[in-house]
Amino acid sequence: MFSRFRDFLYRHRRKFYIGGAIIGGAALLSRYAEKKLLEWHDRQTRMLIERQKKRQHYDNTVRTSCATVLSLSGSMKEVIGRELDADTLLQALRDQPQHKRNIWEQLKVVGFSRAACAVYVGSLVCAAIRVQLMLLGGYTFGELITTGQDPRTPITQSLQQKYLAAVHYLVEQGTPRLVSQVTKAVTHITAGLPLNRSLTLPQLEAIFHEIRLTLAGEGIEPENTSGRPEKKLTAEQWSSYVLCVPHPPEGDSEEDRILYNMLVETSDVLDSEDFNSTMDTLIQHGINTLLDRLADFYPSPKFNGVTTSSENWVDNISRDTETTKTLSSISDVSSPTTTADSLTNDISAPTTSQYSVIHNNTAAATTPSITTTTASPTTTPPPATQYSTTNTSSLDASPLSNAATSINTSSLPVAKLVPVVSGIVHGALSPAQGHLLHKLLSNDKLDTLGANVYEAFAVPRAE
Image (cartoon, rainbow, N blue to C red):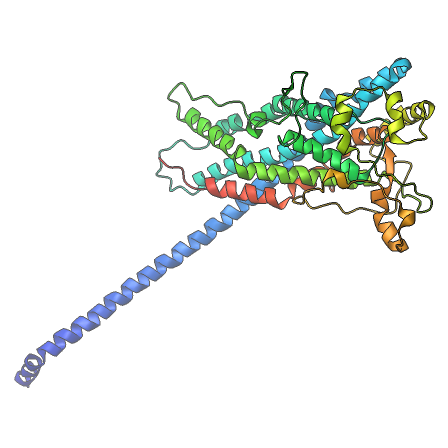
């Protein structure tokens, strides 16, 4: 029996070898596949957990940046109020009534400068803080996902504090310089604007548009008698307002080297095209928000007996700037029936109490019932030559269409707009919901910039 069984195995030995190899290989392959499947499952689980941690860390960083910007609202208002002090001019207006025209000219520049600075300072602080904290968040998350076997210097608390000290430079030195640059551009644009000139909302939008173009380097630079530019009105690189120039570390400290690299990378981001594009969007969005707020102070015009006027103020900026006239001699440009007495009345109309009302962010005496829809941040305002008041009584339009265009045809004298644009900075830079800072912080382009910066640096640092 055993001999038969041995003969059977001997005759079919190849089959047994091949079958055993197949069965053994299948067993090994199944174990290998099971091992790889478990590794893949563990890797997917780690990636999911890492992605969830990254998302939570990113959301926390966004909330921290928003809270930081809102906490700086008081400092921003303080700097603007200190650099563009309207209270001193108001006191001089009470103490020196004989110089009220010159003082009102200064109040005009200060008022428009405060409104423009609220937009520029708010936009820069929102964008700069978002970039800084996202870059720092990317570095710290890169430390979180290391294996623990890396001997590199971690992002310590002291290193984070040194890096975030740049915020003090932005508030204490960068913001005053930016305010000064914006004031120069506003002075250039509004120097020839008479106080008794009535401006419609589109004309007011054109003024802010000219200020933005001037600071962007696309406007007309002022010239002296030799025909050369007198002073540069274009804003500097944004990084110069946010960071001081980083210097290479002198010692061999690893922490100083990391800090220097972080500052250099931050400066590169602030000077990039993406950041400049984001700033342009935020500034335009901020101007639109201010115009929405200013529209509440415009009265609803009457549709019977509206006089025709084809006057375009922006077309005459250069002429009015070059031709320095007294207010009494310019009064004839605004209206054929304007007299020197009525000009004086117009200048004296807005009193100190009106400044108090605006500074307290309360409604003005006029309460229009029609709101306005401004252009989107990416929409370029139409040319200044298109802004003119038309004779609505000659148009065969329905009351609904008249109501839709009333906010663009109503006007206010510059002297009455000055306290409005001067006091609007308090509400614009308020940390309350619905104001300028919240609208800037929720801008989609700012979110995209912050996400890109975070993704770029949320990786383990190279050796």
